[in-house]
Length: 120
Length: 131
Image (cartoon, rainbow over all chains, first blue to last red; front, side, top):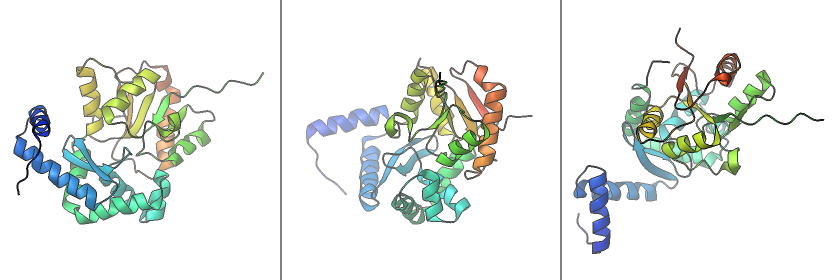
């Protein structure tokens, strides 16, 4: 896959790659993948987490794996929606993404919960 | 003269439920917790972890959340960057996301017994506390 971008955007990507301590090609690949997923799964965005990039609900602070955890406990999209105080469609969107990428969600969940501190 | 409402001291993050906040109020009337969706008309919902932690410090709020590795990591990053956070209360993995009664009992008992008297700047506490 290849494409052309105006020089000012290439400079921007170069700067961002340097800040992220990655190569320009890896960063461009990530942008293409994440933007295509955001288009395919409306309402899903990506952010940095300790275990890597993480899918979350756009405009909210909740990761997809956190919706999955609550849904496993409630076993119901309606009850999960009530837990968060959201319309049901947001839960359905999170679950649709989780169903499409179960390994990614498991990895994110494990990374966030199994590395947690036990001191207190 | 009517008593003034007490200022909020605890901010429940979005991964917690409104039902947790209601359960706290059932256990302790006027318990100073508010859900992030109701705080500042929900305008803090879109904040990333670091921005939320700094905003909490500025507003004198302790953030209550489930233990995600990234949140305490961001708290450390905030401190290393020379900023402060307003404190974190994190539910351990043993606390179920939907056990609102258990969450409320843990937070209200801890807060009323000792937490409310602390300086929370840059402090992180896990509930239940270690024996």
